[in-house]
Length: 133
Figure 1: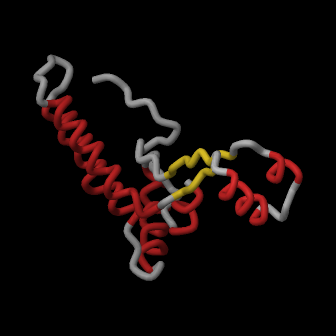
Figure 2: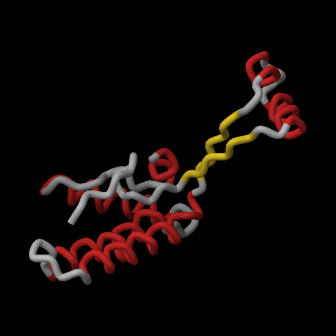
């Protein structure tokens, strides 16, 4: 299987980029930037937006991609690898990104700290950690 190219480990890309060239919008953005000279004189601005709400859509896209790759029946794609990869997006990712008023974050934190004593594991599982990741 070919590696998926992404700047994050889960290949979820929960961010978007907006390339703004409209002068009216640029003026509004300059005001939001406290009328800094760089913002006021820019002919274009790229805005980076992180959207945590995209994780379900992106996880599903990764599952669909993995299913298409594993369906090609190449010798390297075993059933064990298929199950492991799909389990990551169907179980691990929802576990990380689902929150119940912040309570699940604390429970996940305790659980993963204990498991981390015995094996390497992703430990940034609280809501504040996921927001940054």
